[in-house]
Amino acid sequence: MALHKYLSIFNRVIEHGERRNEKYHSHGLTAWHDFEGYTCFIGYRELTMTIYFHNKYTYDTPDRQTLAEFETLIDQLANDKAFHG
Image (tube, rainbow, N blue to C red; front, side, top):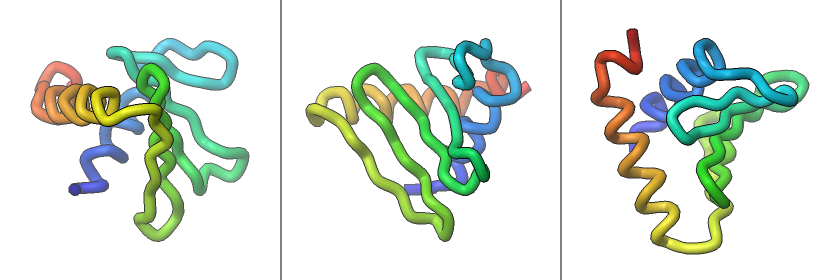
């Protein structure tokens, strides 16, 4: 897993997403971070990916199907030149 891909998408959602209640929304994803900015979160439906300092991460998801859909969306956005400007 290339964590830099997730961080790049996180940054794009933060930079260009619609801000609602301290979270940013774009392309079915929600992105936000903790107060200090060391812990980042990417949400998709009922899934939350938490990216910690020192390249550690966890998923909180109810099922494998949602995780598979999330991974597919991440791959699509990572390869979408329009998404990355």
